[in-house]
Image (tube, rainbow, N blue to C red; front, side, top):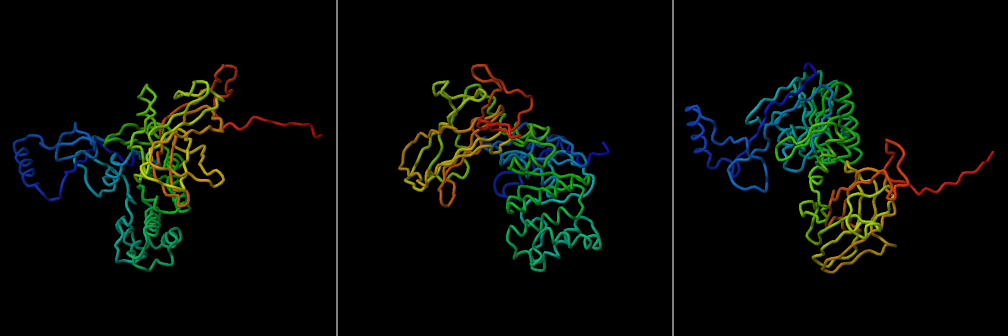
Length: 432
């Protein structure tokens, strides 16, 4: 218990829908009347869940009965779709807002980076904002001064440190914001998806710093849609769904649950792509279906391949307007959402040109997959600009068995070494 730095007990957060400050007096009077009569708040119905596709009611529960502990030195990854309640939970932990029901017990100081410019005064310079943030954390000026050069150096904005931050770009703001949050010795560091604003080099630098913070015995709570970052950084994972905790455990299991649990409930192989799975969709085209198959099954969709079995990826796309200089790509993803194989259409720079209509796309995979769990990613895009027309990040989970189809060969070890089995042609000769 002494190592617990954060304890969340029966926490729920309710928001009122509609315009702020409109039609609330009658609700306040009704609540007051219920209170003086010793009755329950009429607008608090914990049984309701936060679902965007369910209409009705003036209130929504962004979080519903959340319970978990965070230990000293933990790096906790919060995973969930948009609207699952991740940012609301971080705001509660950072004391930006209070829970409607429940308690949050914190041991130590919390430094948060929730949005670009969080905690910065736009009229103050970068240097002045460093001191301001330190003062908010309860640090003395002398303590902040000791860390000042290190913060400025890490942020990479030394040239502009005496310029008001309202002149900063969003990337510069994030750089300075993270540097301040990570270096002013908070017991708990809370970081939202905001790091995605920074460039790849800075993101790598931040991930390394968060590992250093945890190794010093401090705690990190990290939200990201990048499963690779979550997997590389976090020791534990928490999956939020519709304002509820649907899974808590080690990072790999949490990622696998998040990416696969709904699909695994379906006994029937699902080849039709739900439109909600599309991201970056421009309306010019949309993927309709995708599946894997092999010569051994006569072209029927498969959810399981045998070890060393060659396979084909078949998809269909609906084109709504004439487009040219187009490419299509296919990703094979592991169970953590990481790309392990990638192919794109650009045969001798002869790109695709489509007229409106539906098209069937067939791709013979040149790779042999090692035993394990996989899924497909699909993209259609403008080749020269790289801008996406439609992109499906994670669809059609399937697995590869450890035994070949005719049962004459089996992968020999308990541990699977890698994802792709290379061409098994060897030449060995004696050169002594």
